[in-house]
Image (cartoon, rainbow, N blue to C red; front, top):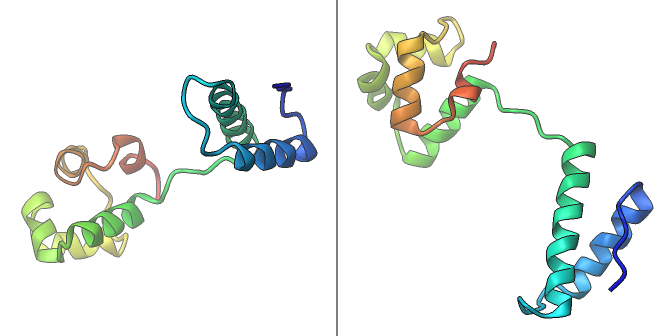
Length: 118
């Protein structure tokens, strides 16, 4: 087991190829340890070189509503009137702090996502 830092695209591809070879390694074995270390290195490289931004707050709400099978009328119970929900989902009305708190606790959307500008 010779593990080196991932410094460039070639190193990254080599690490991915090796990870694929040992993917089914058992924990506690030498290959299992190598798998764990490679996973950490690959994750770090990807986070630094291919960052994923946070989703748009309104798109996150729509996505979560779809996941939960919610309709606009269901969201009205969380944030207020149906017309308010329509304005929020069309980005004509900004979320208030109270709405953000309710959306966080009801839909389990992180507050970091909901407080962003849109």
